[in-house]
Each structure stands twice: as C-alpha cells, then as structure tokens.
Image (tube, rainbow, N blue to C red; front, side, top):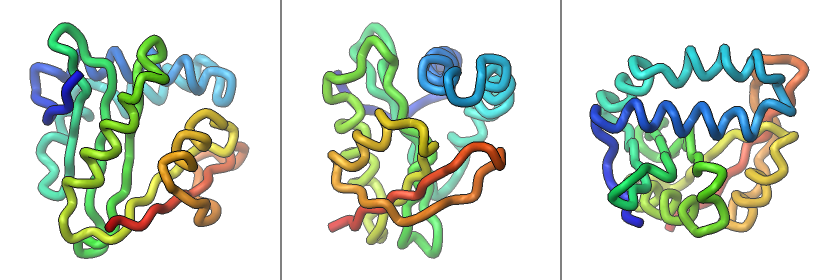
Length: 160
C-alpha cells in the first residue's frame, strides 16, 4: 500500500469509495436516502475535481496498485496555521489495516507551517471518534451542523 496524490483519473474510483463508505457509516445516522443525496452532491466527480485545484489543499489516496482503499483531503486555513481534515475514509473491507493512520500521517506532514490539525465528526460516529482519539486528537467542542438533529464534534491535535 502506498500513499500518493490523487489525480483526475482517480476521481471515479474515489467517488465509488466515498459512496460505499458513506452508506456503510452514515445510513444508520442520516438514513440511506439522505446519504445518497449527500454523496450525489458532495462526492460527484465534478465536486471532487474542484478539490484538486485548491492551492492550500492536499488530496491523497491509498493505492495498492490495483485499487484505491482510502482517501484523505485536507486544507490549510488561518494563514496556514490550522489544517482542517475534511475527509479521511477507508473502504469498509480495508479498515483496521493501518491505512487510515498512513493517510493521516501523510496529511500531517504535508502542511509545514501548520501547528494544529482539526477534524469534525458526527457525535454518533463512534468508530471515527475512537480512531481520532487513538491518533492523539482531543475533543475541542461542538461544531456547526447542516442538520440540527445531528450533533457534530470538533477534535484537534497539535502538530509538531
């Protein structure tokens, strides 16, 4: 497994991974119909392609040479001092193999001027919360949510 920068040719495979992972993760939280609406909007090939163009962003995939098993996207904010991890997803069948940690480590090393990395997680997503805590993140409070019925938590980790 190796981590590399995502390219345009990866976008359909990234979309497929995100749709699969979102349904596996969020159907019980948001419902399958809402998850399909979100993935159609947020994870369209066009929307994913726009991330490739962001000047302060890093868009990575975990690739074994045959398939993409994970994806991560982060962008620097506040004059480069804070990195917002917007996505880190690993295909359900590939979880528990260290891929998420590899992606996170590469993201953390990609923003030289940053002193903090932040991620927002649905409070009901216990698996993601456990992962981020194991990776050294601490809860930093509530975050705004697009749905008032869904609680979102913010987690932060200092970067060395």
